[in-house]
Image (tube, rainbow, N blue to C red; front, side, top):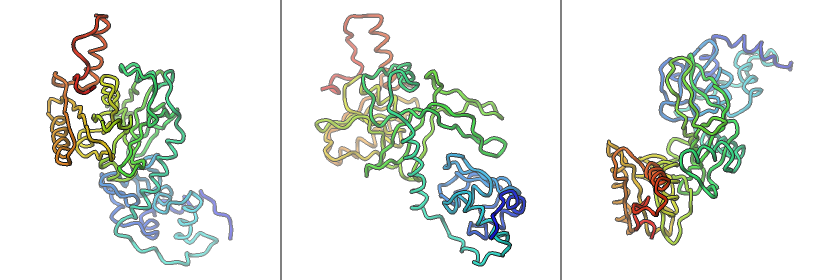
Length: 361
């Protein structure tokens, strides 16, 4: 059997990708130009887009690369490497050793094996975490947190700095890496103690939140992203910044808000990532006394989520106290920074604590 030449196979596959991918078992409905479809390889609801039938180009936002050409789609579908994808495509085209493929096309599955794709994604999350390192006050993440008013004596173990994380976005219908940047990573842990997602805050090397614009539209791109293990992996999950102590635990929405709560109150705290995450968080055994630090959103979203969580926990027999900042449109990081500014102007002890006295008892 002769050695496969990648360019020969690529040229033969040009314009024939729907036929090739169908022969390899991908569902035919994937080969449309409709946006925001479930990925035929890893599921989801709107992460996949078929772009260019000539080269088989696609977008899948669950991938680190955000997509690729037809060979990348075969690798995504089969879970193999480029060599195995090249051999599979050549086999469909009758190029493997000059022989037509001996096996019939694989049957079209109704949906991908979610257990397999979740395992793949879990491996990607673990790899990114292993590439990252613990925080220090002088690295980009430590400087970023300090610039936000979060000066920590020690950093939680669930936070790390990735030194050069690619930032991907869709440009001209194709995934494009805009560069590699430092990123603050936070582990989102599920109720089983497994890594459900990585919360990523992209930074500049100097320790500022990364400011990127879309190359086509000029719109600001988000500096914060969430890479999940699977579609529902984060239900009930949270960033466990500090372990519960003596049955007590504080809860907040965002990572920085939660760190502010800990600095202001001394309470162990978890960050629930969002208002929806706060509402659904699952607490570990042994927690009896819960402090919910809600954001004071003008829309009331944070308060509503906090109220629903409080009701659920109270029904379960826990003691619950809910707090929100006095001023609408603020969160507990705003409260902490206001307190620090006040202390800087007035070195005498302030009569207005960062958090209510009963929260620190």
